Image (cartoon, rainbow, N blue to C red):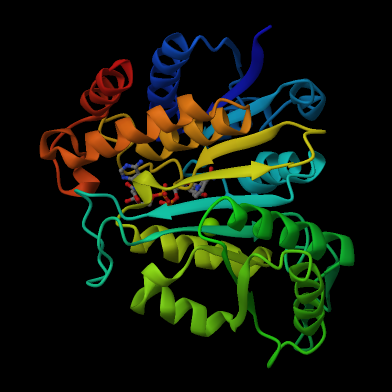
Length: 352
Ligand code: NAI
Ligand code: MG
């Protein structure tokens, strides 16, 4: 029986890179005898401008039965970014309890990192971000609007269940890699939630005696991403810290155009969602020059999540080969290739 994928290309280059990812998926699935079926949804800012909402009222129910969601990017000039975020991405992440946001970071051969010490083959780590609670809570409010005493309060929410499960995910992931976890904290300055985070991570770490770990303040972790990016394996962080660290990590890797992400419900009770880190890039949309690698790598993560590890490895190998060749790199990587040329190269490598 085929696994069912909901595809949401979104806006701008989201549509271009999703089409490229679909092409690569078709090839790799044919080669590995994998059956995926797709339904495409036009949920986007473009839909918001036309119909008044990013997705239909029953959108979450429509997505619920799928095995996974493949998303491009949403965002358009003229639509405030919080509308696209809170109208589509955040409802999906929260309704489907996608409590893990995982972002692998690698410096590939052929990709110049802006960080001098970050050499290909030496930088290979994963940022595991808590994705449904923490600093991004809806608890709080505004008072005294327009008056001199105007104020805003937003509460961070950390639960034992929430911190435990993200820590467990990070330690389990480390077991499949180099067995090292860095927990990003700030318990010197944030005196309630962060000591609690530290306590729960320490408790969970005890269940993984075969994994080494250390706790480090977020500011020190940020500096080390630049100074010693090769020293990390798995980095686990709260929602806000993980958001910032993962963008920094993507920059260290050389281009936002290659960075992938997965929003996971590791229990499998709900569909997980895979999307490139970048946005809809209105500045290059419609020109056919977007780097499709971030979307393709996200699709490879989806394959792995769906139990197709060999196919996922095949896509990774094709990415490595494509990036190694100067002729098949896009402009964001200093090359001249367009989206179609990179996609064709990926397909060639995947087909073997
Ligand atoms: P962006 O990621 O869209 O673009 C930032 C810069 O990187 C631009 O110069 C763009 O041309 C370049 N870039 C991004 N992806 C690229 C690719 N695949 N190949 C080559 N170059 C690439 O971020 P920006 O400009 O801040 O946001 C644009 C819109 O996208 C906004 O509406 C924003 O809200 C939305 N956005 C959506 C996200 C999502 O759907 N998850 C994530 C980030 C932004
Ligand atoms: Mg971000």
